[in-house]
Amino acid sequence: MSLVVVIGPLKMADKSTSQIWSDEQILEMDTSTSTNILELKREPIREYIGRKRRYGKNAEYIKKTRAILREFETFLFKDFGSHLCDIDDTHVAAFNEHLRTGGQYYTITGAQSKKPKQIDLIDRTRHEYLRELVGFYNWLVEDEGVLTQNPAKKALNDLPESEFDLSPPGRPRIEMPEMRAFVQWLSTPIHRAIILFLLKTGARIGEMVNLDLCCLNLSHPIYQSLLERRGISLDSAIRSSPDTVFLQGGYQSNTEIRGEARTVGNKRQRPSGTLVPIDDELKTALLEYLLTRRCAYSHPQQARPVFLNRQGSGDNDRLTRQSVYGILTKNGASEGVLKQYGWWSRGLPTEEKVTPHYFRHYFTHNHRHNQGVHDQYMPEGVIAYIRGDAPEGDSVREQTYRHDDWNVWERYIKRPYLEGIYEFNLYD
Image 1 (spheres, one colour):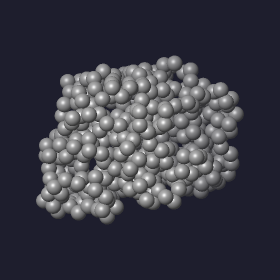
Image 2 (cartoon, one colour):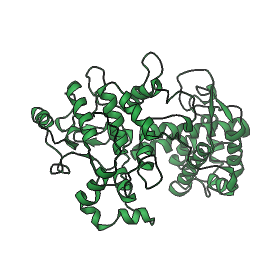
Image 3 (cartoon, helix red, strand yellow):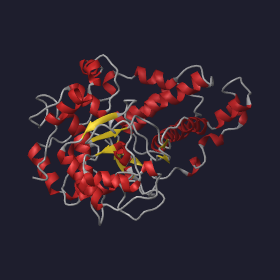
Image 4 (cartoon, helix red, strand yellow):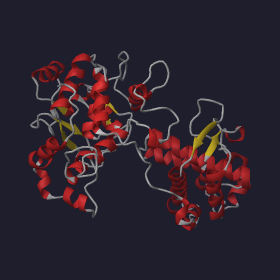
């Protein structure tokens, strides 16, 4: 079902719908007359978002959360004349119906145009919106004591199980000959390096763009000379592990790593990070790219990035999440390689297009025994380790992953990885 998103908030909501309420009306919602409580009730979303920002939530998450809460706030005022702190579960149930069948949004998720934008709000997204409301009201109940019960939690619990289809979206099945043809079709070093890195490590985009030269150990005299000329010493995690990349454990955006504040976080759940072996094909692609790219000088010495934007140097020329998506999918005069190849087009559903994140799924599913498009396979524990999954849980996969022998990295990670990783015959 398609919904219309109005790009740009309504004039009445430019500052906040809560500003239409008088202090007397706000105070009637509770017996407290605390100045802090009054301010919180006057603008609960602002206070909540400020708390999230103080706890280091990234900008993308904050923007999305604020948009969801502002939409709910405006919906309450327009449809019920109600305040965020003066509702019950029926209001949340009505909001769910608004998201499922309504003709338009009152507010927005991003504002680059004033024209309405058609979107498909799938069940998983609608469920995510309601979960954000549960978190917001849980904060008002448990942390601030403004309310005595969580109306969003009750509404969500009371909805029938059939309300949401939470199964993950399907993804295109690309057989190995087709993926091999795509990789061999790539014509520039940066495209080959990015695509092969994502395919062979299963890394997220944020993990790739945060990668520094000191966390990449390539056993080749040219690379060693490159490090020496720049005065870069390898991280202790990989100093004795040739042909290995170290993907650091998780951290939030704006965290300072090796003297540089990172604009995007690293979601890798394994706290100590991950040592990922590099096969000959990826090694060649990385060397080829590093030899042809320009130099990066606008970073602390130990934070020189592996992947750079193609534009001229500036205060920060590290490849960004946005620039990766631009390189791979951009519309317009400079089309991304996925769009050029016919695998991506704006508006196509997830199950019909290849996105930059698709390659992480391709690595995960196509190295499982008798499940993927690849003849070889890796043990489940190796896949979990390479992906950086959290070493906890009760599944067979996680029990294997926690096995003490995983400490013997050469035997239990590197060997099965190199035996199982797919090859694309790019440099034959």
